Each structure stands twice: as structure tokens, then as C-alpha cells.
View (tube, rainbow, N blue to C red):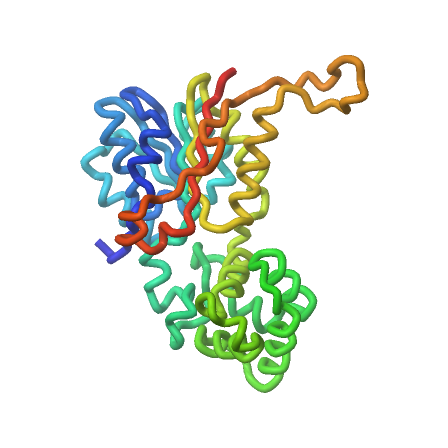
Length: 313
């Protein structure tokens, strides 16, 4: 095995939410280290099937190895989960009993120095690509994107209050030499934020998150994907989604709310003309969060939120 590891967040809560059963067909759009997938296959034995996707070659290799005891019952595709329609067509699957989406970056990806995801690894190259075959990397964003685009990325994807100052200092620094290491970028960010605003965790956290999201297009088409995947569920099928920052959670919440609505017509109209029917029941009126024990054992669960919905038509 290649060292790829990932502690699945809220494993039992996810599996209970999915209500996994024998003979079901499940989709794991972010298989990672196969923590959730392993339990889905185990609990859907002996005939349940799993269709999974991931962009990371190391994750696919590790997941395939970990799941080999279930050979014949799973297929893993190197693809973005947003390409679910194409993947399900290739797998000859029309409807699903359950969908699992875990948007967290794996422990291995963060901790692996050559992947360049972490501000905690100063010598790491500025990379951040989930799919290492794609051309766009964090180094490209930092060194080649216009200042106003960098500002927008930091504001929109990182909710960074000091986006303008950080972007201006990036432009100044890269005029002297190309910024190639995580430590170089972290130093620029720290110098751009007043010290009194650096009391609530590492100064670079929000900016690194924002650049990672931009590099991997993590929010592009997310709303449509959640709606589309939910509509691929059979009646009674469930979707469980783990998010790790407010931007993702807001999009999932909005998609679920839309699917739960019975009519979206202008309220001034005397009768419904849109034909929209209530498609799901939201089973988590408030998102589920990790318990204290899990937060203690796995710090990356602290910001996780789990939302679950069931298809009713």
C-alpha cells in the first residue's frame, strides 16, 4: 500500500444515515482511503454494489487494495464526482439506493509534503492538485493570476478579510522571484495580516483553503451536482454529505431546500404553474456534528457538518 490514509469522519452517523441494506447500489463520489466505502460494502453484503469516483491516483490505488475482499461488488472510476451521469452510464446503473459525499481533504494529502496542500509544510511545493495530471496548480494561481482575480478567490473561497492586502503583497513578492514553496506563501500571508488578527489559528489557513478550492474547482457546479445526484436516488434512497467549510455547507443546504419545496411559483399566482413537487425529506433539520470523543481523536472532524436527505418520490 502507498501510505494513503484517511480517518473517516462521523463514520457511524454516515452509515446509519444512509440506511445501508443488502442488495443496494451505492455511489461514493469521494472514495479517498475507502473508509466509508468499506463499511458500505460490508453492511450491504452479500450482494450490495458500490460505484465510486476519485481524482487522486493514490486514493484509487489504496481504495482498490483495501476493498479487494469485496472484488466483483465495486467499481472505481478516476473521475470528478460531478461527472456522475457519465460514470453511472459506464457502470450501467440508472438509480441508486444511496449516495455518500465526503468533501474533506484526506489526512495523507495534507500531511504529504510533495502534495503542497498545507501551510504547515514550509518546504512543500505549491501544488494542491487532487489530480496531478491537470496543468493548473497553486503555483500557477499565485504567480500568474491577475491581482484582482486573486483578491476574488481569497474573498469568495476563503472569506478572507485581508484579501486585498495579501494579493497586493503576492504581486510584489512574485515581481522579485517566482513563489514556489508553501512556506514562502505562508510568510507573505502572515506579513499581510495584523498580528492582533492572528489569534484564532494560523494566518494562512483561509488563503490556502481558497487557493485549493480554486485549483480543483471544488465549488463549480456543486449545487447542480447535489440536485442531480439526489434525483438519481430510488424512492426511499438517501444521500449523506459531509462538508468542512461554510461555503460547501451553504450550497448543500440550498440544494436540499430546493428539493424539499413543493412549489416554487410566485406567491401572487392563484394556482401552481411550475409543477414542482416535493422530492425529498430532509432528515437533518440541523446538521450533525462530531461528538467530543471524535473531535479529540480526530481534530479534522471539528469543522465537519453532516446533512442527510431521503428521496420520497
